[in-house]
Image (cartoon, rainbow, N blue to C red; front, side, top):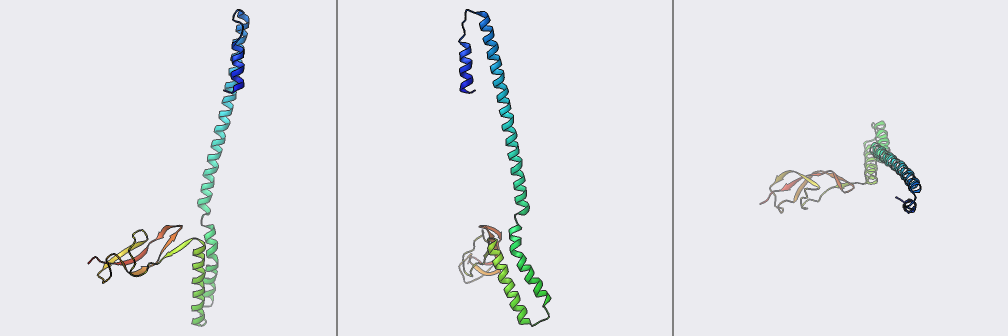
Length: 176
């Protein structure tokens, strides 16, 4: 209830109590004011509720669009790599050294595209400590190295925004 409404209701309740007609008019006036206040409050509530529902619906649509087009920028980084691969396939009968150079350049483009997409290689050093958060041990083998250290890297892993996309596949030294 607003201050204006409180004041007007208080003023109307301060009517001369000796005059019954005046009291009846005052009560009718209060009922009218309270009915108007109720109608205004209902209207404000319905408008706020509709606005909240519209905001919720827009947020759901925005999330759906974000999921649908999340990979769009990364795909743009990969298109030049695809073009290079197609060009290499067109010239596959030429000199093998040129083909090798082309593949090396394409690999360089691919690494650049991954970097732009915030994808980082996980390539642990031999002898480094095994980290189950970034590495997946395929086997344990006897070794002269300290236990639970990486003996060989079978496949590189990848991180995307500090989240493991694929762990590095490694073999680990057995405890002695």
